[in-house]
Image (cartoon, rainbow, N blue to C red):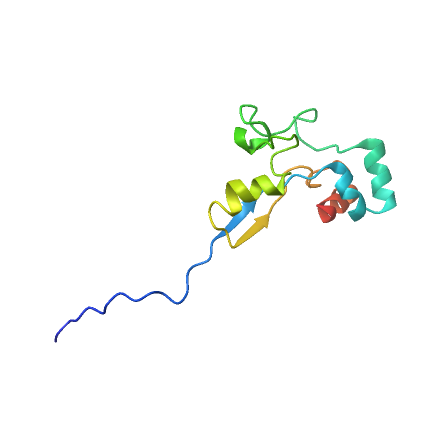
Length: 125
């Protein structure tokens, strides 16, 4: 049996690249259009009341606020993940991402003390 190597050919397809753990950050006001009047009023009155020991703070490591790199904070202000232009520059375009799956960290409605509000906020997120 003779083994003959094929000459290298250009591939017709390429693998796509998907980041399945992008954490966008929204302002509470942006949730308004996704919450009913009842739950928007509830949010304005009581706020978010999570079931964890850090009720006055974030449950992420304090050494990395919002669990984000220091350069992920937008230069014009705002939270990490809140500036699409910066996210494109630092992640999507830099690594030629084809798709990104968004997983918001806070607020998501997970674990709020009011289960019905928790469900409404999770739907809005």
